[in-house]
Image (cartoon, rainbow, N blue to C red):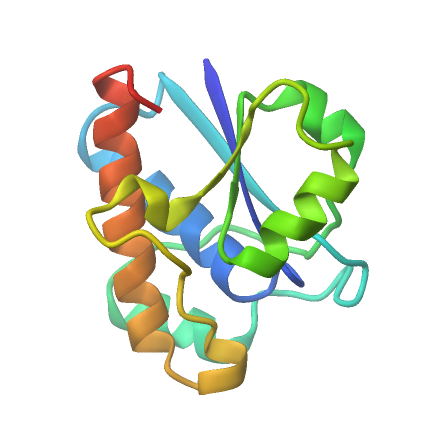
Length: 153
């Protein structure tokens, strides 16, 4: 089973949204036995907190089922155990490079780099625009699954 870890700053908005969207997409495609995903944070600021209420509302509005979630921070153990570590923005990538000692195994990527519009997933914590963040995440996860299935991830 191929293991993917979605990572954002606090693990209460974008990375859990990506986790649940990815799970929905692989289930719909009949690929849930092939891929496992989880989400974590770059920082310890939100450890133990649930998904941010506005993020949960957006997922519910879009019909995405959520499982239990409590924010947790990524560790080197996670780096060793996951095949792909997916950050949401440039700050996450800087943090991930530091946390993983410069990513010696080449596992760290940005989600939107799998799309035709590379860049950052919009951060709803600062913009309040959870709809745009969801749209970015849906596009990124859809393209990530395509890349995985085509052996290009």
